[in-house]
Length: 147
Image (cartoon, rainbow, N blue to C red; front, side, top):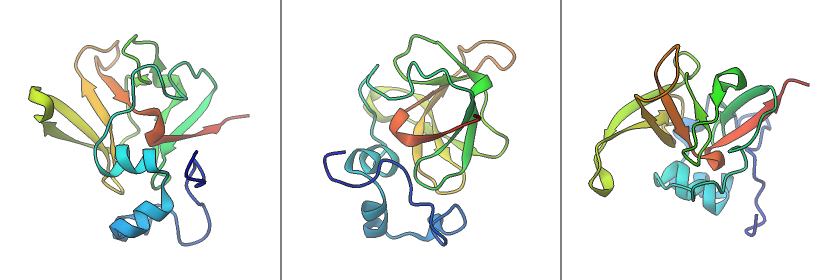
């Protein structure tokens, strides 16, 4: 990234999911890239079809880029055509959902249950078995390959 900060979260001792909820705004700014901060902490959105994971097809798990919490298994990822990575199910207890009425729309926002970072939105037009489409910003996630 242009600001020189790593694209992934620092995984050193003391920087994992257990302590991320207590970070100050300044600490979040130091930990995240400018784009990650805009999306994760200010509820921004990356441009459609611009994200690293839109066409990503590897087997593994997607984690919150802010705190490392496991959010989605690659087996639940599918091509929705929406322009962002789409999943039909989140890992149990990994996300929270809240009403979002910004931009003159009524949507369900998805946030990390551990650190309360904005991830994206969920819609009721996804495939079986859940009927859900979790539309998630690539910059809000990190990926662990199963290989």
